[in-house]
Length: 515
Image (cartoon, rainbow, N blue to C red; front, side, top):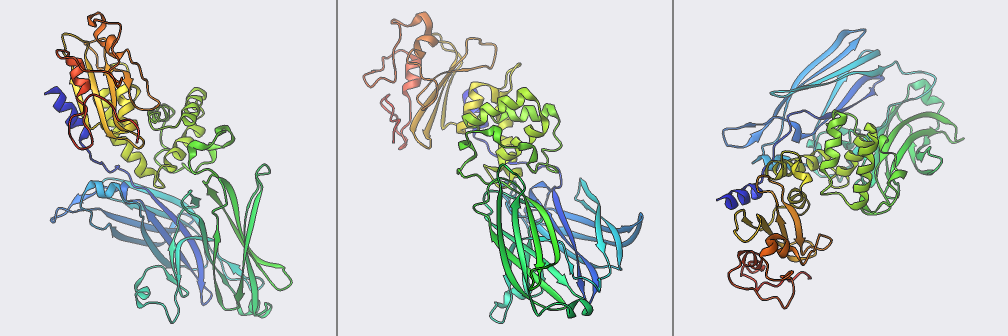
């Protein structure tokens, strides 16, 4: 019964959505007929809402959003509206969500300086972003107005050949369909940078400009040790409002902080307007983070964990979290984790932890949540009074390789100490892999790994002798030996020999460890 209960606990799967709200916002001021209006983009992470079961058994979350424009603490403009997610069939479907819930709103403003507050609530939680400056100044008759840079996820240009469905899409602006990218962080899977802005001209300014001028987008690093720069230029036609959309490939832009700078030049190459912003890029020449040889060369304190769930972790919690990912980490990462835990530099610890998940899934929240479920199982099932489950041999193997296909649990064998035999049918590079665990203390839950046929794991041909101790008739029996023949009457040998081939039939006691 204990064996069946343990196996059922190991194989059960499920996901729990985090009880928090995660959203990002960007606001920009544009002009129409020389009158200012604010355009707000909101991006929500659907995996962080609280969901309710609908009558059709689907899951859906509803949000209430409040937008306030204030001057000197006095509310000048107010809006409240509701949003809801699509219907999900299960918690697992929500947990696998990679897209964002996007919202765009536009508000006419009188000329002046404002502070923007955005509040988002679901059924349980509220989150705010406050005191975001908004400048809705009068257009100057002396120089053009260039709005702040907006980052774009995807864009389409509407023309006479555009399909009719584009007319119904959100985020339509000046013949463009612009899906916003509300953060300034570009992970490894994003290799094109897209920027949108607008140049607004009064009649007086327009008279002094040629019919055509140039927009130059520069991306450069101010790091003297790793200098980098590239540019893209497009030609613009003069109008009352000039939409500017530029794409730039960044597949060769490696990790670091960069300055994005847009300048508008006349035919004499004099700059008549400019805007800039910072972006953060995570991209390495190697394919995976684990291949980086010198982790000390990376400044993890600059990684954009600010505002995420990681930012809220205490020093004690981030220490625990770093230790808990040892089973997934490559050796270079494990060495660096040990260094971070010893040094206790919180910003570096959080930056590394954020990047650890980012390099395994572009959606850091999803990667963390999925591992959190498995970590909880490992701690519940394999934990001891003095050690977390992930810090035990069985917990480490479970988290590193996943649940085994079969478990032979023998807590009471007259001829041996308590032991377990785990079998994995199919690992990425091996088949029919076996792990043997045992404990010398029947009163604890601490089982040690004594032997495995997995590459890189402990392999001890004397393991059976150690478990059976003086009961063995010889110094040791190597059960992995091709010449080994199983003797009757030994339950230990019977359990180890009862391995399962991929076709489901019992094996003859030998292992096919190589593909």
